[in-house]
Length: 352
Image 1 (spheres, one colour):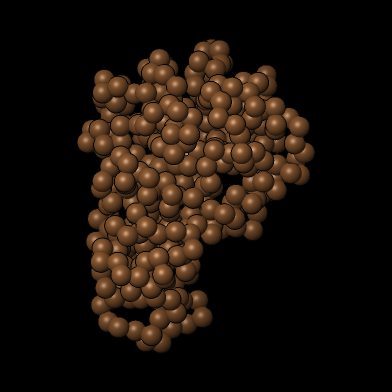
Image 2: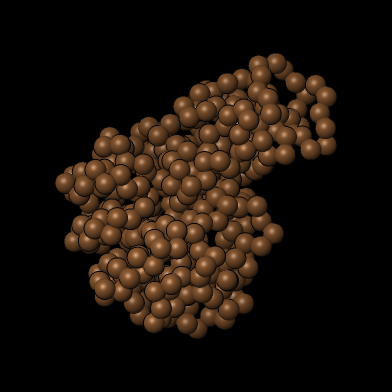
């Protein structure tokens, strides 16, 4: 097969379409768009498991300056005046940007192509993240918070990201949400993390996205499903903070669009392979659903279906290639199961 300089030829096991069905053959990528897929054997540029790149649907990159916090209650760690905010107040702007940059590079090396960040620090906090992202090809959805005394986020934000409604005056939260809607921005809130008392309040704001729902009961999830609100779960983070684990299986059974996030960098690395392995082995026992959560579902949550998610001919894609001949992956029989339960960042050959 002849190819031009703006084309990349891949071969191996392709996880195709919305169902991620394994297909043996080749894939021709032209300027980021899937131009051809076929069953023939070819001399390719890269050979391996060809699949959608990963999407981290909830992360706090600004917390990259604190990697080893003590085991303390959640409110003492991240609540108003908590340890995180104390450390941030003592950290220079330069070091905060450097920390975010390092975590972004870590995400790229571990197969992540898109992320949604709950960005604190007002307008300057957003500018710091954009500075850290410069020169990367990541899709970054910034969910900002207003400066003190304001209800508007930085115009460069994709949306607003609000901690629990119990952390702020209700009137202010309503004004922030109304301002965001008037500016065409998305609305995301933490809810049901430490308790279920803020879930109904959050739903009354008609958000696009809720994060955590660790303490949600079946009646809460029924309301979320009825409202058509997407959810992002962060099980490793919930485990560290001792808040229990979300009922992911029930969420999926109810038809909720569920994504996967790694949450605060100070609690866990932004490594979705670790998140997938834990979720599959501890909570779900469904490898296809787990992989969909951090690829296809995440693309829908981030409004990035046109540039990420399912691999289809004629579509722009972010593609990850996994080395199935590495010491870790050699001997696999089910590519999807091995990818979810076993693969590591060191197995990533390329993210295209």
